[in-house]
Amino acid sequence: MDLLRELEPTVAANLDRHLGMAKEWHPHDYVPWSRGRDFAYLGGTDWQPEDSPLDPVAQTAMVVNLLTEDNLPSYHREIATRFGRDDAWGAWVGRWTAEEGRHGIALRDYLVVTRGVDPVELERARMAQMTVGYDSGDKTALEAMAYVSFQELATRVSHRNTGRATGCPVAEQLLSRIATDENLHMIFYRNLMAAALDLDPDQAMEAIRDEVIGFAMPGAGMADFARSSMIIAKAGIYDLRLHHDEVLLPVLRQWKVFERTDFGPAGEKARDDVAAFLALLDAKATRFVERRAKAAEQAEHAEQAG
Image (tube, rainbow, N blue to C red; front, side, top):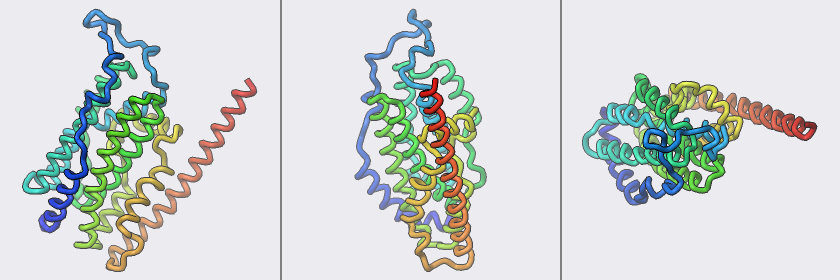
């Protein structure tokens, strides 16, 4: 609680910065309503697989992204519990929740109107996902700040690349707009964690170490997540290489983790742990990318031979 109070001026300053940079947008503007038609309940026709303009990979990525956004009530509970609902912290929690709420609305409207996925299965998946909810465990406020600094950037990368994978200009525009929100959220949390590093370098570095090594996407608890994440990784939408190069390294560099000279023994050990983990992750990412390229080459040869 002392650290949260010490960070309050930084929260207030960054909330003002965020409000000055965030642009108003409306989910309904990004949905091609003219492509919609009634389902059988109202005299139309129910969804058929051939209705979808999306290939299976894009369908999987869109559903994972949407179901992740659906757990917003759980995320709100998490940050409201960790950061409080008073003063600048509370103002941020409310603003963040309101902005995040647009994402699920827009993605679901797009998928239902364009018949991108089976709406019955989508609703069943939403019910299951929200019933289970999201629980980060017993993270401290510092660990929560470290986690969301990485997670918001990971979500931005995932949304951006999913938009490209759809092959639909409207979907790409929508997901790019959502990714912009996620990037601003990342900057907010990243700036708070930078301030925390200055206030308590060792404790902050230990929190960063724990979240780097133990990182999992917030959708990891959804049904078939392992299978879906592998499909997404094989398509290059979000994989170990992107996680290493475009999520972990940029944030760690921004914090100057490997340049700081103010760590004590605990902070030094935590930094060494992060460096060792990054080396292992880099090696795994390289192997994955090589295997993926080889598999793609073999598939191309087989297609040509056939």
